[in-house]
Amino acid sequence: MTCHFIDDRTDFFRLLEKKLGADFILEPSSPEAREHLTSCDVIIIGLPEPEDPNHGVRLAQLQKIARNPIGVPVIAFLTCPDRQLALAAFTAGAYDHFAETGSMDELRVTIRRAAQFYELNRELQRLRVSGLELSDFVSIVGSDPKMRAIFSLASKVASTDATVLISGETGTGKEVLARAIHQASRRALEPFVAVACSSLPESLLEAELFGHEKGAFTGATAARRGRFEAAERGTIFLDEIGELSPASQVKLLRVLQERTFERLGSNQPRQVDARIICATNRKLHELVKANEFRSDLYYRLNTIEITLPPLRERRDDIAVLAHSFLQTYAEKHKRPSTRLTRAVLAALQEYDWPGNIRELQNVIERTVVICDGPEITMDLLPLQFAAWQVPCDRCSFDDEVRGFKRRLIQRALSDNNNNKLQAARTLKIARSSLHRLIDELDIPNPDRTNAA
Image (cartoon, rainbow, N blue to C red):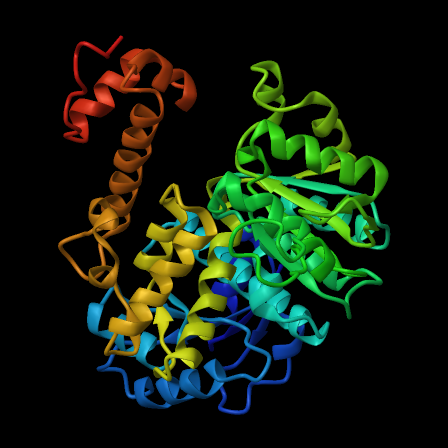
């Protein structure tokens, strides 16, 4: 990681360079000090207090550098922990700030966050350059290693006609991944037909999938193509496949085995030339054990299985998703450009997201619609983020650490049904330490009937 420091105190920053173990580019604070912006990950510029005669010049320089065309984040290095000075730095466009009186660990965290933010922005830029639609592709590509492995597998599968089973919780982007596989395949110019199996009643499912002939049932006044025919030479996506009834499972199994089907009211077999991608939020192997899903159909569907992790297991991608949705909905609703405050980003990254990407998408759209200022602040988030609300605009380092510990312990207790022993094991601390932290952090005592 390379940091570009713009300040006159070269000896002081040389000492910092040794302690931080980062590569520094040191430069005097002249207005034209912009030569090395393309070769660094973070820019740090010294900002003296308002009483200093150089304050105005340095603040103007910060504003100019913060608008660098390649988007390198700028950190304001404050000579004193002054709130108004920090506010002036943010107004000028600084990504973050650090007071000279802070600890070395705080500075490391601040620089690391800025560098990660820059890397996420570069990833977004690479996606735009690739020519793919950001709104369709960003949800399945991120910096998380799990998603990288999934994308690598999906790109290999896309060039074939193999049946794909996509599993994952509701809202993890299963249909988005299916569309991406279709778009990367030789069938990309042909139809992509999505069918929500759980939304169709059993009496209509067969006719919906395979079509019907005129007179096949009351009201069938004309022949009608089904979804499989509509997906000819393209891809058919069967969502929530685990909800199919036993009778429908038999019919789908025949399609997979023989690649033929018959319209309702006809005995004329028709060939299937459509790729089949299925998705489920249920664990099919458990349904097979419970005799609720046919094992032969499961093995037919399971040629290639891709499991999408929930958003809480890929927290490094929350920021890039949030920023992309922010841009998308600002354009959609014709709202002015806004930015997420550090507190909001921290809350988004710590929240468990039971609704996964879809919930994040809805939260960002809501904040964009109701936001009237240049920043999305904590008070604009929905009620489920009330635990992250703080009484001050910018808490101290100790307050933020205390808040993080409190939320971490509450989440561990909730995930383990308030069993303190299990929660302590999850946190990898002693049970006595957990009891002490519950008292120190004023966490409401869990129901004693469930506590260990």
